[in-house]
Image (cartoon, rainbow, N blue to C red; front, side, top):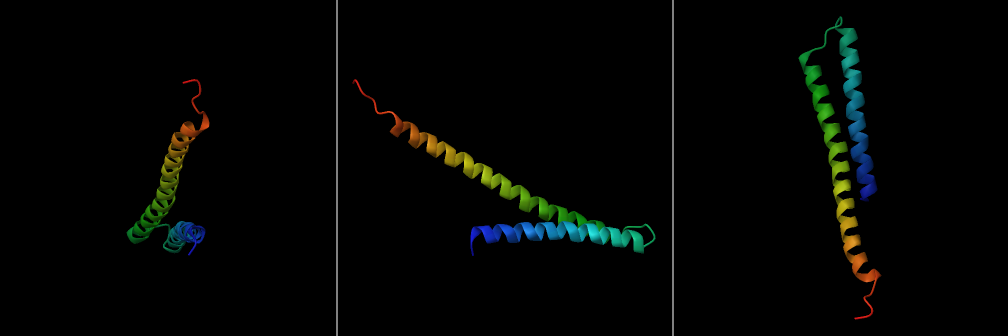
Length: 87
């Protein structure tokens, strides 16, 4: 499985969880005479936690890998760019 496919699956499930939580909340609100059950609130909270962890962890890891890549590039690039002459 390609990493791009894995990312699309993660993002798709995160968005699906958010949409299902919103749909369930509205359905419960209008079908139960403007009362939202505790179980629905629990499901919405879990859906938001899941989506937040998917989006947050992915962004954090990409940012850190980008920083490490830039540090390595700077370290290797500075050594090979300018040969010392005159000594």
